[in-house]
Length: 57
Image 1 (cartoon, rainbow, N blue to C red):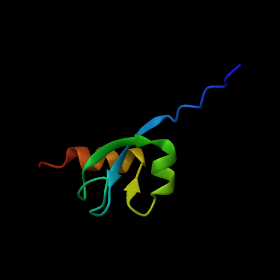
Image 2 (cartoon, one colour):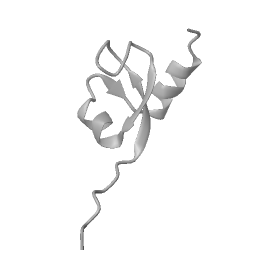
Image 3 (cartoon, rainbow, N blue to C red):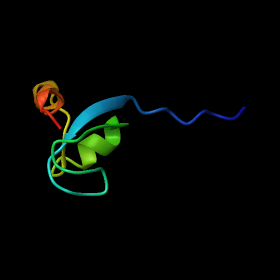
Image 4 (tube, one colour):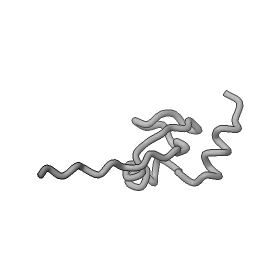
């Protein structure tokens, strides 16, 4: 029987610097593993996401 590949949970993250994920203060939805591996460019802390979402663009 084939085993299914585990599906990563999706998380919202604030983009910290211009990168492949977007521009600073963009809010993106990525796999949790991507957010963890991109800690220098993404911040998945709920407070950081709320701040970025509160900015007038």
